[in-house]
Image 1 (spheres, one colour):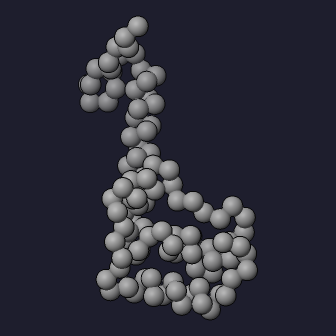
Image 2 (cartoon, rainbow, N blue to C red):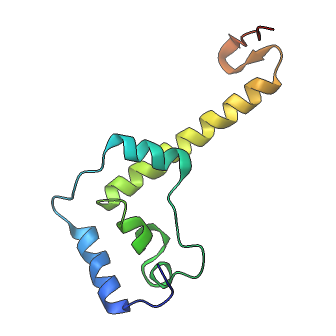
Length: 108
């Protein structure tokens, strides 16, 4: 999205997105991909983000059918990041990773 937007139209779309009674469906595959790779956002200035907020800018509304879907994405993203850190820490450990699980030996 470029920096020039119709602010009134964007704010109206945000309100419709928030108050949507029966939002569209977002596939589980899409949610998982977003959780792993993140949501692509504007690289430069985003007027929509300025006026509507980061959690409901055009970039989010274009990919998420509702605020509830966005909340689920954020939760999945947080869990995925925690799992990634556990994997990294486990790879550094030669003995045990959390919960006493023994690290697999590498086959040479």
